[in-house]
Length: 472
Picture 1 (cartoon, rainbow, N blue to C red):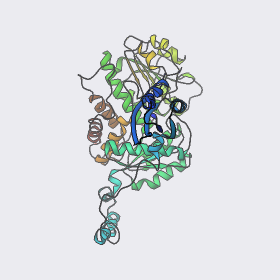
Picture 2 (picture 1 turned 90 degrees about the vertical axis):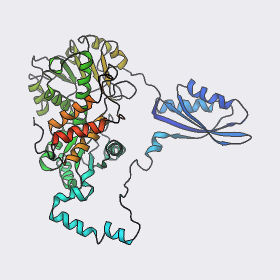
Picture 3 (picture 1 turned 180 degrees about the horizontal axis):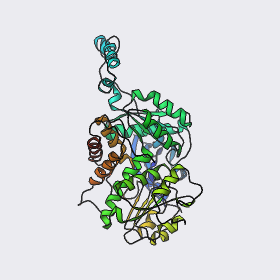
Picture 4 (picture 1 turned 135 degrees about the vertical axis):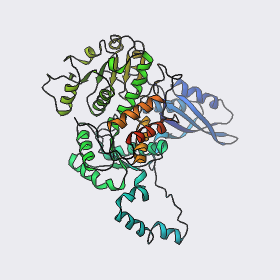
């Protein structure tokens, strides 16, 4: 399957070029970009003379090859001289996307003496006498470590810690933008579980929470479990719990659209890794009863002889009828399909075999499990992880608000009740008047999202939470 792509700002370029001042070249620039399949988003004259004009043409392309084709088309316009081509995405990342700033002025000797030595010694001694004061007197009260080993970065796979850093920077920027939280990228040059746990345990005193990110399964399960046992601050694996919150919130509203109840629908879930397992756990906690999970070998059931601990738990809690076929068979008659797996594993014809009023969440990125346009021909509600279709399920809807609530409550752990509360609050942001097949989940820029999720988590925490999530 190939998902038709359209020009995207992710492949936005600015072409600095020169054209004759009196010719037709200026009027031909937009036509040249459009004839190559691009979209002009800005055209700025940066220098004007009697003989020539210098112009910056900014346009969106589908990918890097398409961007080059656009440049070639511009270069073919008579009289055009190309000076420079800039990739706007790479320009945004030059030197990194985040920075540290002081919250206090350091204008004179007195201010320096209070912020640093000798005045800071009084504050350090106060914390030494009462370690709980660290939350009140340091950045710990508002800081999160975004920790990765680079083993499962976005949809790119095991690309290592250095290549993961731009993603972790972006995550930190989102924490600040949507919840006012100071987050720090921690990219570890090890994929050994023992080493990851020990490193995070050692740096934990400086943080109010740990956000595990892009760590592959099954390693991520063990890392999270052990850190929860060792630390007195919350540990949240966004690939698991953030995804689960957003899926449950979106499904809550999708079922409202089609007039069905979570406890009465049959759900087929593709993907038994970190995200799939977390989605399953939260769905079951919310009241789902009839779920079949499929991995690349087909349905997970008790009779399989390749079950590790995680798959065994899935087999014991799902697929009561013991279905042992493939994914295509599992979606037949299903009310809901949720994919957190791989691209192109279903077709529109497969979706046509689902129950009336079917709900399809095809969340693999950038290419979903089924082409959204094909799914829409047969399903009542379709959601993806993509920004170019309605109903984008994006973890940014969850993790900033979740951590805002955890930090405000000075919670020591993340509980299942908090995740359920977060999902319920996120779903409730969509009002009855707004709810529809193309609007089951709010935009990440909706002003109420982070605050609503934070308030729900804070209330669920009840000050300081002391019990953790149920273990498998």
